[in-house]
Amino acid sequence: MEPTDHLLAEAKRYGYVEAGGVWLRPVLAQPARQIGLVKESDDAALLYFAHRFAALHAKVDALLGRMDASENKGSYLMKALHLKALLLIYDGLGDFAALHRRLTEAEEAIAVTVAHNREKNLATKLGFIHEAEVLRDSVEWISASEKVKDLRQGWLKTGPVDKALTDDLEHRFQTAIQVFFDRRKSFQADKKAMSSRVQTRYRDLIEQAESLKNSDQFETTSRQLKLLQQAWREVNGTLPKKQASELWTRFRAANNHFFERLKTHIAAQQAGGGAGAPASPDQLLARKRALADRAEALMHTPPQEAIHQAKALQAEWKQVGTVRGEESDRIWQRFMVACDKIFELSALEYHLRKRVGGEPAATSPAERARFRATTLRELLKDDHQELEVLRDNLDKLSPSTANDAFRQMLQTKIRSFERKIRTKNDLIALFSQQAQAAG
Image (cartoon, rainbow, N blue to C red; front, side, top):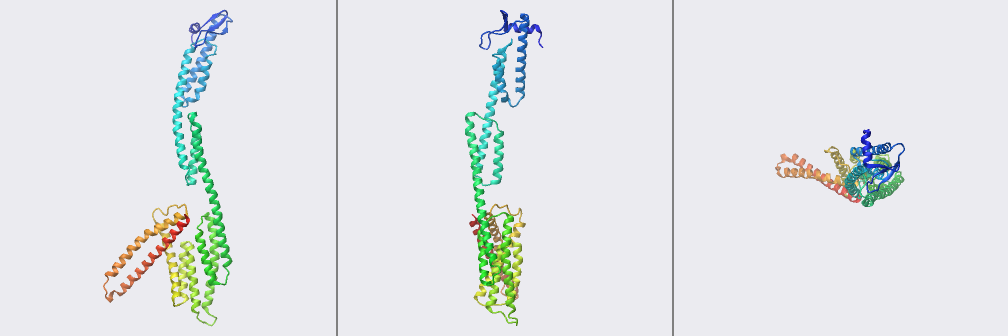
């Protein structure tokens, strides 16, 4: 506490006693005003009001001290303004003008800090708006939704900006976010509707296949099931993995059931009428046509499973017997091309699993189809180079009969590579069509 004589001197400097009352001298553009009464003595009354001023002075010191130590100085503005207004009505004796200057300086400093912070907040919010407007047109729904969520949190944590700009900024930010969520909602509704249509179409094909699986019209039903398999491929829909697997399992089971019955039927026909009678050319053609149908149907079977079934079909083909004629040649061509495609698809999948980095994550059937077409084009380059080497070696080979065996081996390899190249080109065309159909 300050010495009493000093406080009394300060009290007399800023106030006085008159007619039994204690008066504050003119200050802060206000006239002198009575602030109290003398109860004991003039000096005691003056000292009382000097102590009151000292208490107010301590409040101002404490407030400004806390403000100086705080990073968020703006939060002290209203308290400073309240104390500044209190100076005009406070009953005490002291240097009110000095306190008023200090509080005014603090108010101005806070105003500068607030203005600076609002500029920073403005820059931050403009950045958020720019990001939101970029994400507004995004189709990466999962990652974009997470980013929008982060933007919202950042927006709420960012302090205020100039009041004149607040509404416009808020409108721009919320509009961009709402456009994104409206687009996502529309996409999800379309996806749900499309999924429902795809599921309905698959179930319809399953029902048709199941209605045919016990048919005894083997040749006609084989063609009908082939058409159903083609229709299944053309649906090219995307469903959840578990659901797609369940539907495909049902469809494949119906097809397998029929073709197993067809296999049994062919075996019975091959055995003849119980007396070892040989099968007629038409019966042999029917068996081979059924094998060709089954080989072509393997295009819808996973490659690892399809290649084993293709080898089994080749073994069956050898047991059917020989039939001559153009129709037999056409059926053989179908069967050979179907098996070649299965083997090439299996080789492609093996290559994709073993390549460095593996297959990139594809987000749609179209992307997967395009990626496979591109990979096949890359593999075609090696086939063409190998074919050129074989042809060059054949051209340079001496016509001596001693080279006949080697010549025949080269010719066989050349025919094999020509088939591989044709098959790859057919698969590239197939994948390109799938990519185009899937959009």
